[in-house]
Image (cartoon, rainbow, N blue to C red):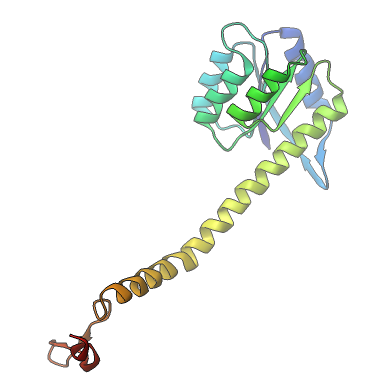
Length: 188
């Protein structure tokens, strides 16, 4: 179940979005997403919910009183950086779009009125992209865990050996004493 938080100061828009998200299929490629939607008319109430619950996608109106969509999504990103972010706007404002991309890294800017199919496709695409990013991060972390520590230790030992030969490997005698490498003694 993909959890979506939507915020718009117009109740009629919220009801319309909820209806579309509840009834229309959300697919992208061969992936279908079941959606759970929470709607808020107040950006602050939506942020409060984001503090308490995890969401996969935030969708916000651009022009709202008190806090615009970019400010809302920026605050939501600070709380949940891995969630996808979309902006809805009835205004074709290039500066707003540029600001949303640069400050928030939105996945999509969707115009009002929206086409239901395009909206659902954009949501599906954003959720698919999010899943891929999370999967890539998880795989990279696994590689680092499996190979990174050993490789990092080996690289550091090789670096130290070049700087100060003989300090990264200690040869122990049977009685617990340190046995000096004759090659090391010749270098001194």
